[in-house]
Length: 163
Length: 470
Ligand SMILES: Cc1cc2nc3c(=O)[nH]c(=O)nc-3n(C[C@H](O)[C@H](O)[C@H](O)COP(=O)(O)O)c2cc1C
Ligand code: SF4
Ligand code: FES
Image 1: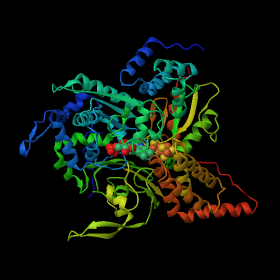
Image 2: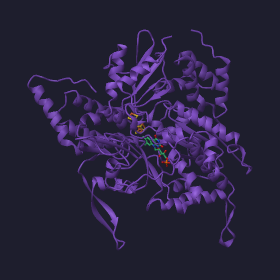
Image 3: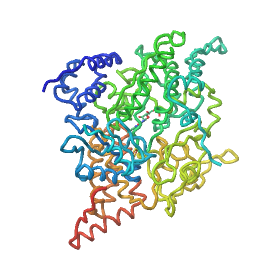
Image 4: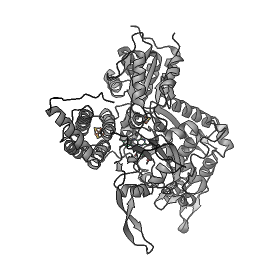
């Protein structure tokens, strides 16, 4: 796989480095920017970040494996993150999670992120999203949704373009 | 009648109020900054002088402001620990990691009134001679990060940030740094490691007190979003006025997040200690009570790490009598004033100000299992008791929720919990064991009955009526 960083992204990364007295500090922000662009963090991306920040690849790998938001494999184009934690659980988030899984033909009892065969949707449980008063809550990509009934979930899914 | 007192949330949710700087300026925004940065040097007796920076630090100390992030430590005192003689730069970090389950107050400030935080931060930085500061925001708030970046850009364009702020010669830069889904980044030394581009492994104290050896081994202040927003009001109204709000030793206002089984979950700003736990749950101005026909079972009073209260519990709280003497008085759970000291005297903590309410439909074993899963997932893994213990507890609880419990599981859980707390690098050890210790102790009959029933079923040759893990 070829790994080419477009100039705009490179410029964004160069700008990020200037925010810190020590380059290494920029690594989380680099990983976010790279994942946003490429969809996941590939070994090539790790090498690239390490080179750019004068680090060893292991210094970047240890972040990718520690921080739950970083993915080493592509996820679906629409990624649903349902809050699993107590207040949302009391408010029905597990029902919501089951509903999404059923709708997408995924297994609600399986652990971790699952993606539909066509690569369109992913579903996963995440921990408290800091909006416990509007349970159950979830994110669809960067968008945040609260008080998500099954009907509301259906209409959010219906708004995800198929191409 | 107990009511909200909106100081920090004054404009939040007001019709027509928007997060941009023009709107903020129309509502008196950045006047506190102007006031703080241009304070005249104060002449003290014996020819001593007090710089504007020292005056602001003094005001924050006198205001009695206590940190809103969890520990409730005096903000002014924390600032006084900063090593100002090291010759190294001093950093300030705003803790916007908001990830203690049950808590959703910082989100409101960040999304709806970001300039209030920025103004509070600039004042706090000025007071502590900080030239470079960061807002560490949790990764799952991408919209919040965008809003803050926009706010910082607007502030820069107006000369409130950057070089020579308001012509005073003071320079400051603030950047937004995003986390990536790890709860432990909320712990201040884990946060610092994370900001240095490493795994968020908390540092051991001593020697790594942030005020001396923080970011890049330099003196560093870490404060919560709401704490920094409060600084803006202290400068604006003065310490004495701020301290008139709330109750003695628990001054000002605080935003309480109420979630779970109440009719009106939401965020409510109160004068600290001017509403009781019962009022916050039941009064129509706050949680509005439980749903029809339900009764109260349990309350977590300060974020998921706080020890749970059981409905009907009674406590002995220390109170000052009319004669000025301290006496112990009996107080019912629902009559505990919601302030730092009272909740602590009742054996728990008001922590991040998050109240989670559970009614009688709650399966208490399930509820604890849910929380234990959270902690097992979030342990950073540095300390053996925490890494292993949090997992053992969640596994045992998982068994109990899938029909494979044992009678002795209750004691087993207590045993593990007792062996974690106090034996770890950071306070996560307490955070993960306190829910287990308190749930199991206070609801022991339920845990034992569950285990006994599963054992009886297994003995009858019908093990594991495997209920799917909710
Ligand atoms: C496990 C753990 C998680 C924490 N999470 C947060 C958090 O999400 N937000 C926060 O402001 N403080 C959090 N804290 C508290 C911080 O370590 C620190 O005390 C706080 O940010 C200080 O700010 P304050 O003095 O203004 O309260 C956490 C502490 C621990 C031990
Ligand atoms: S107590 Fe837990 S979270 Fe804290 S440093 Fe130890 S292993 Fe990490
Ligand atoms: S428990 Fe779901 S947002 Fe907090």
